[in-house]
Image (cartoon, rainbow, N blue to C red; front, side, top):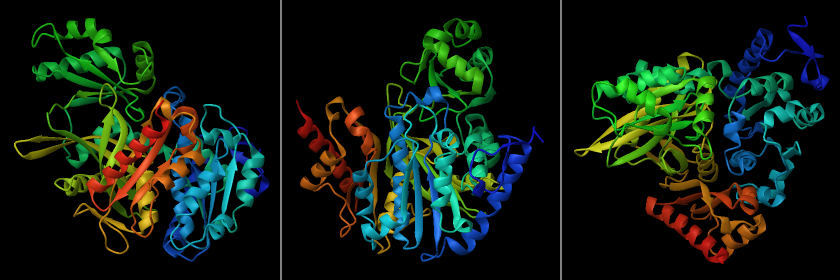
Length: 522
């Protein structure tokens, strides 16, 4: 019994005096039972706009702690899923939103006042904001599990348990434990299936689907195997100039490194040259990560080595998909990602939809991947990244990775859907509002400058109102801000700029930067 169950530190109303030991077979069994409860919810409750239902939002960024500390203002990334407050437009839906530190009420009000057809007062009655009051650099889910009284408050705020579920940023064994201890189903991928979204697992899925990808190797374990992989890539392609080494569980490009073959012989002696030059020719993407730290992470998580896709005209599109509890797979958006950093590997923002020339093809490939993942029991929102290269007026697409979690393109899309009550047509690559109007957006999580430091949430909202940057419900265009809590301390902000054309959306973005830069100029 001691191997299977642990004493219950959470409230008895969670369902038992004892909880399964985390990561035990019994916990997995109970988790799978809870997941089955999602099916009747999706069949009967969630399609009904007026049905009583509760969504418990756990925006925990549960990733490798060292990678997490690399994200500037990382704790405020928990604010990105405030886009899910748009669920409150359904008049009997309750939302419970849990964060590490309290969210300024001004930020919450900022979202609620934009709800179409619902007063802020009505929405506020159905919203419960809870906090751990803990700013330490650990995941939110871990913090919640350490606080049984907070877990009880979560449960107490649910009117009818049978009509509730948890949604999270990503799902790891920690979120599975939280789901079981709260006795609530979790709308996310079973963590036992996450390998399919690793860098190595992604390549295997792409190969099964017959989707094009860069030449390379998965399941690479250490320095020696990195050398072997780089050597074979160069031997097969003597003109190869660069390769990418990726940790299986990297985040937003932070687990990548670029290897340069500059100076390497095209034949004969390749392996010895690569071995001698691995350290000084490998550029790690994550700022401040040394070669030794990167290799240590690589040995711990393993990874892949693949060719760096060359091209003068190159884009980075993605497809965002969903598999619901009924087994339906759908493409809900495509984006052209905006990448930056010295290596061009760091996610900065996105244009929606992807270029109409190839959006349909990206969506088609995304749906093929979703249908394959469905066979394994994958559930929830996820995205597939590509690199697209234009040659002789033709676009060639290379699948890069699958992210079995919400990501940088999730919250902008949730905001657009919530504000305009529309739908994306994956075949045509266009988004239509509820009234049939086309809409586009430019989004970024990385509007940042040291000179923005000191701007408070009230300052930002005043600037938006005075400079006509607010989202206007009558035209369904304008600017929505997120990561607002990171602005004063970190000089960092997120934006979603919605327009009736791509040009209009980017004009809103440029105007936002102009206003911020003008006001904060010293």
